[in-house]
Image (cartoon, rainbow, N blue to C red; front, side):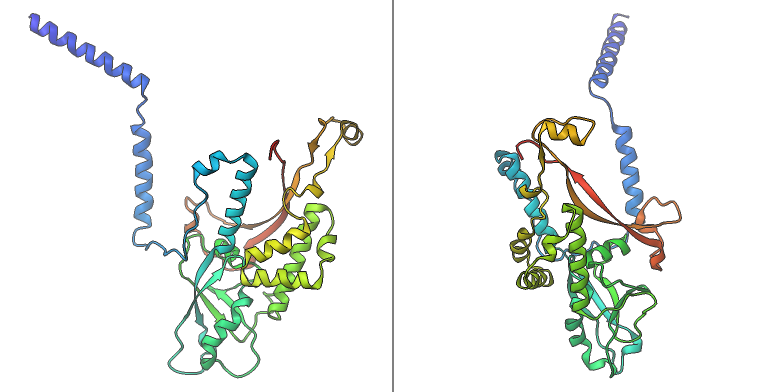
Length: 328
């Protein structure tokens, strides 16, 4: 009898200790099982898809220890520079096929493999692609355009934006078809090669300058030499050369020339709500947002029906306002 009482007492104490431990350390096994099940379901749905290869070396952000010792301003500048280099150094692996209607020799030419800069444009790749298919092309004047799954690609949208917009489930390499005849003028605006791309880029630069500063005088007043150097840097994907020219335009997010520091008197005259002396008007960063309409409710975007026409895609231009923090 005494042994049974001792055993029951010990069991009660162990149960009490277990309850106290659970109160102190919550049991997240239920949530973990839910996430594991969700991850397993997604894994089963995506089973059989090969992991996409990476294009080029991976640049990693500066080490955390080194960043912790730097002042906040230097830290932000380092991250900003690294982000710019990652964007400019990014590329999309392309596999370009010649359309059957343009093949004039047998056997058909093999597809052309190349890397398309994310900040680049398809017309800038035409000379290289044409050289690969030259022996199979029909005679006549070339009117080059690209398509993806039957959708003509707009030449003035950067390659990286097109890839992200049209490939919800990233396809690597990105399989495209190139045409040298039959330009779809009812869908695509005319393209006269590199000159058209350059003209479009300059217009976008003027629009961005207007959003940031309220006018585009800095871009309009660029010398011919600077205009040529900037375009060459974009065409070649040369970030260092681009930065050397773009800094002259004073379009950076926090250029001192565009930081309007207001006194308390000026603030009261321009606004009903007084601002503290030394306050800074927010910086306006130009943003172009592409919006893709999807009709059905989806758990995963990659399950959406591929874009079949440009009527389901639109874009808006909006300035994104940020404020410079103290000490930055």
